[in-house]
Image (cartoon, rainbow, N blue to C red; front, side, top):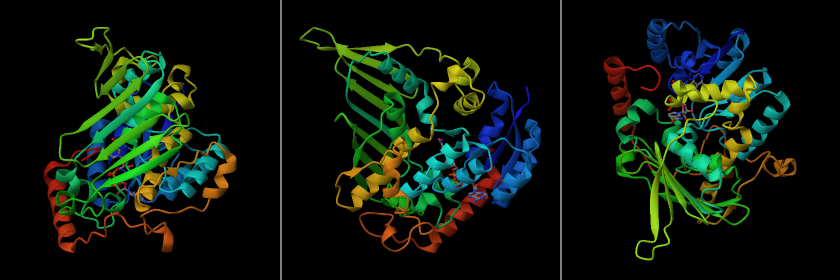
Length: 419
Ligand SMILES: NC(=O)c1ccc[n+]([C@@H]2O[C@H](COP(=O)([O-])OP(=O)(O)OC[C@H]3O[C@@H](n4cnc5c(N)ncnc54)[C@H](O)[C@@H]3O)[C@@H](O)[C@H]2O)c1
């Protein structure tokens, strides 16, 4: 079988897809890498041949699209700048794997949905937290009916990145992580719930945890975490909490039903159910994590290889891999609640509708809606402040310090993939 030819935009996390290509069990080769940060590309170019990888290098995405012979593209540049590159790739007849997040505004969401529909190509959203073994098993138990009908769900994603901020933001004042709103990076917590329930949340109310010194001293000008309270069309409430909070990394999801509840974290699930004993009314049973149909054991523990297998499986029409797909509509079910929650926050925590762009009639209302915190996309009344509790000012000296730390780290501890 002819190998699928992979190109990558963004040589940090994006490079992981190239490095996992050999492990994913499907025929794919990394043939092109695009990144416009030359110190990074120099290191990548030096080190990849030792892994048997010798792609062509580009600093301009359009040039990669026009010149490299690629079938699929992994879009893994700045998280708030994916839509225009995904759309360009789809228009050029490429299948797209998008890293987080799919879009920054409703206008981009409408344009992306329509580009996917027009192209007939696969668009896959790489929300890796849906594939954590505990989350996958909880989703499967829920669909098997173990807890009955859903009455409430909640999920957390906590990742205090303060100590690594210089590696991530390079001391760039206008790096997306320094100005996107607290609600934006929401799909690690909302994603697993949407993936398990396969439902579209219809409205959201947002809350912001204010900007804190431990983030501000590294250059972040936004709130440090956020909470979204959502509702499904049948009234069931969902709660998501995510961001930089002072604890170690956490991913967790709780699904509460009429017969019991499932509590999942990275690699385990506990099923709680009524015991019938009034002295000790609930029992908790640790559930075994079963092998995942259609996904070889060899990739089950390597989430990047697994995502690549699921993405390529859609292209190659592998029926068993279809059940794990996250298409453009589900990507937006996961991401739009965060985008709309910020509007709720700046409007005094009032509920805001979450559009469902499966409905063509709804698209017109949002086609020109560019409201966001990115001055490159919004201006005037559409440009929202990055922090709802008042503008945060950060002196240049902070960004200079972070840039110096990055330089030192790249010299001493450079790691391919996500350094
Ligand atoms: N799934 C996960 O667990 C996870 C973890 C970390 C990051 N991510 C995602 O990975 C992606 C990269 O994250 P990051 O923090 O490294 O982002 P980043 O903004 O630092 O950019 C990543 C790379 O893309 C390059 N780049 C940006 N714009 C470009 C352009 N127009 N042309 C060429 N190159 C460009 C940058 O030089 C950088 O090397 C994001 O989408 C992020 O959401 C996902």
